[in-house]
Image (cartoon, rainbow, N blue to C red; front, side):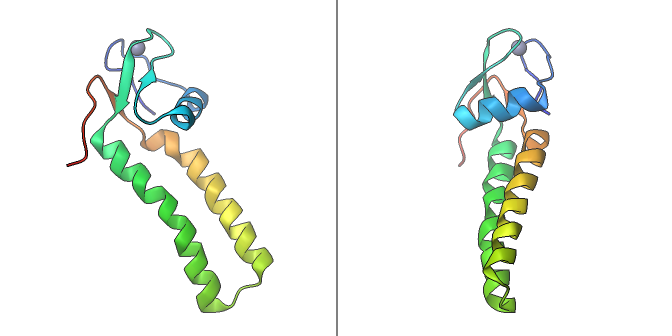
Length: 99
Ligand SMILES: [Zn+2]
């Protein structure tokens, strides 16, 4: 879970989800209001998460799964992403660019 670099407040799962949906560019700390940015590592990790969608599509095509199963798998993948995403996010005072 992300921790504010300014006041050391650890964000809750709910706060992280809500804020990361709004913007990954900059999020105000719920405790001190200071703007926090995703660290480079978080950006990279979160860039990998949506890859589960094409992965499910490939499995669907390879194994000739029924559409309902593929849809259920996509829905499950989405849920899992939602649940684990805040645990992978880390924030800092500086906006690091992906180089
Ligand atoms: Zn703070």
